Amino acid sequence: MSALDAHPIVLSEEEPEPPRPARRPRRRRVKGSRPGWFVYGCLGVVLLASIFPFYWSLLIGSGTSYTIRDPNMSWLPGGNFFSNAAKVINDPAVNFWVALWNSIVSSALIALSVVFFSTLAGWAFAKLRFKGSSVLLVFVIATMAVPMQLGVVPLYILFSEIGWTGTLGAIIIPALVSAFGVFWMTQYIRQAVPDELIEAARVDGATSFRTFLTVGVPAARPAAAMLGLFTFVSAWNNFFWPFIVLDRQSPTLPVALSLLQSNYFIDYSIVLAGVLLSTIPLIILFVFAGKQLVSGIMQGAVKG
Image (cartoon, rainbow, N blue to C red; front, side):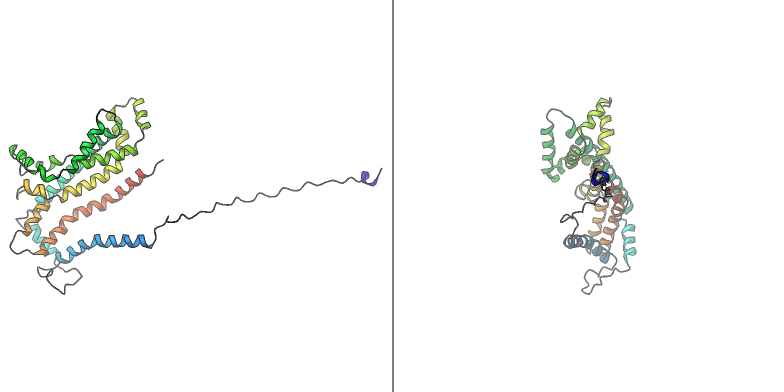
């Protein structure tokens, strides 16, 4: 027996290497994912341009009747705002509290009505199949090209014959639904509500209106919130039709504030103090509804 047979060579197995920790994928920074200084600069300019009219109104509204004509006018607010606001509120020609209540009631009812009917019509145009839906939707959109001034005379004659001139019904009834609201809700519901949800609701035995309430309304809530907010602001600032159909005993706030400029001498400090008073309810509305509006938009934007 040879020496190699007496002492066999044993080949030792190599010990396995410990597993290396997995490398985290490097995050690639997408160009343009974060806004730069140019975007923030543009937003700052837009913000200043939006705030300046309010600040200018505060400067004049807190001064005297000579403030707007003063070449050396101070850019700091004066101390006469509350006295000017008191003159607006206590002016018997303005009838401020009645005008404020009329504006709140009419704007709220118009906003609620537009949201309800526009959402209902948008659901029908977007998800229901009926003959002539496309033609009817085009007709509704085409009505937005017709100026409101063309219907003023027939509307006034109609409300005069039924005895509604001088009442809030004359400004609420013509604005119960808007063509823009129908188009807005149609486009949103068409993209936000999948057809599978509607089929599942029908399989479960839900009627068309029950499907609208349980499927359509929750999905359309973000768009409905924006439509309601913008409709309220538009109805609040409407001047043309209320100025024609309402009387001085029961005006809306824009019509009442226009009476401050009916004198021979116009005190712009009092006029702009009244303008600021009319914007305070809108600012309060945006403060309380802004967070709900943004959260509703984000819920509608996240698909899961």
